Length: 88
View 1 (tube, one colour):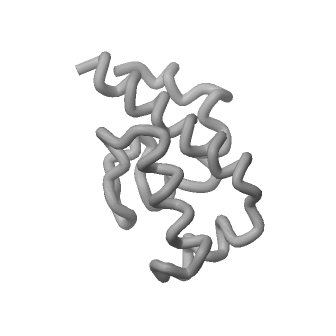
View 2: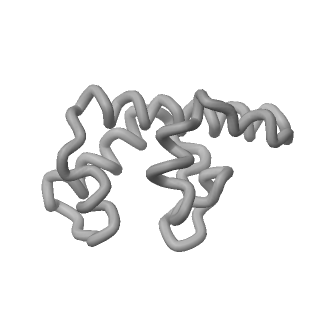
View 3: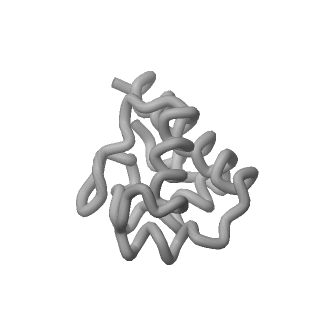
């Protein structure tokens, strides 16, 4: 695993998610996102946006995000997961 993985391709993730989910998506305050695919991550984010699940940090981060932006973020995380798995 190289720090090079945390490139501009992960800019959204690093800005919005890494404080709670760690730089490698393995969870610190928030749950681990490892071993989740893009659709699972998208749905996990959407339940906070719709209010089905409640979390003040998630609500503030995603309340105004369009589905396309959430999908892009989910794709970033899925790509990070793939790179982490391949480096093991």
